[in-house]
Amino acid sequence: MWRGRRVVLGVTGGIAAYKSVLLARELSLRGALVDVVLTRGAGEFVGAVTFESVTRRPVHTSLWEAGRALEHVSLGQDADLIIVAPATANLLARAAAGMADDLLTALLLAGTAPVLLAPAMNDEMYADPATSANLALLRDRGWRTVGPNIGPLAEGASDRPGRMAEPEEILAHAERVLAGDGPLQGAKVLVTAGPTREAIDPVRVVTNRSSGKMGYRIAEAAWRRGADVVLVSGPTLEPPPVGVTVLRVESTAEMAAMVRRHLPDSDVLIMAAAPADYRPAVTRDAKLPRSEGGFTLAFESTEDILVATMPERHARLTTVGFALETGAAVEKGRAKLLRKQLDMIVINDALEPGAGFDVDTNAVTILDCHGVEQRVTLRSKAEVAESILDAIEAYRG
Ligand code: CTP
Image 1 (cartoon, rainbow, N blue to C red):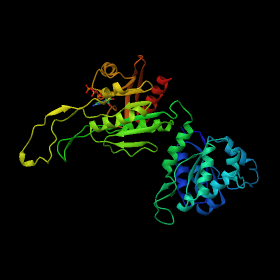
Image 2 (image 1 turned 120 degrees about the vertical axis):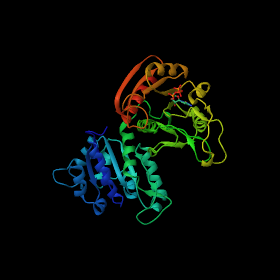
Image 3 (image 1 turned 30 degrees about the horizontal axis):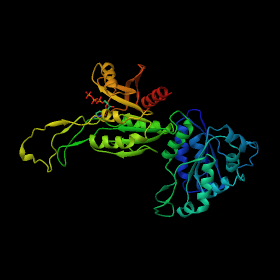
Image 4 (image 1 turned 90 degrees about the horizontal axis):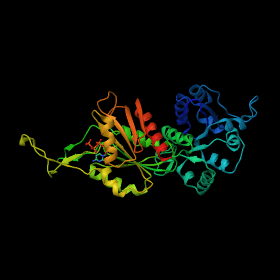
């Protein structure tokens, strides 16, 4: 997504400027051509040489450099994206007023590229009505913002927003801006991920090997495409994706209840989770002691969440299921598509090397209810997630 893309990274005079070096580095490593523009204040915190070393490109510091007279126009017009991180209260005020008294404000005024601001300042400055009004004005003009977050500030601990968003958070938001207005823009996407756990007693559970990776990659990719994403997650080690609302559940019954609650608001349901199909018929109140020497566990079926949603699906909902099979996968998957009345099914064959549970790669067959069949050969789960979303977008037209 970033290879060859032109990014202007404006850096203003706040201590968070040092974190923008990491942002510049991450963007450059991904193949973006990063033109860093430092304000005079930024130069007090981090030197141009530091940015030049990570971007391998000249750093811009002044409106008045000989031979660069028209950069205040060209930089912002040639760019695919302008990021300002950190954006101080002073920068927000000058931009909101339409001032052009240094290179950064001039290029913001002349620029045609989308703008993403990462405000960072003292918490009192952020809470001031002047700053709120300036930010509201800039958002009204279509500029996007990320953060500020609550966290320690240079001047000490704070329980109010002021701290700049972390570089990886800014990067994720930048990807969402750069992705533009695709078909999933504004769509409400409900994704499930991970295993569920069914209790044997207060300390022991029955679960499965699902890692949640496929569902998390789908949730991230859908958010990057502009969707509002709710991720209902069983227990996993995956960190919460930027921008996504993560709702944690434990058992299949809890996952079913959460899916039901969010279904009426959703445009797309993607059931990537591997909910337990069986649970202990009886959950004991107390831990079974080792001295018992052994025990027999009787299981009963849990609810099939997808089947349970059938009477509750509304006309605009696209329902996507998964099928994990061991052999004759496409035939079994097709049967599941029909039985669960799905719009689409993503079929995994766990016997294929590199596919299925607990690995970073997958190979799938995507089938829709009109008979369109697509094979996605072995690749990263992030790439498979993109193919699944492409298929969903194509299906929804
Ligand atoms: N699924 C569900 N509720 C369950 C179990 C599975 O909604 N209790 C969903 C999964 O999220 C997946 C699809 O159903 O999208 C198929 O899951 P899979 O485990 O392949 O199939 P099962 O329905 O469990 O059928 P079987 O065990 O017979 O293969």
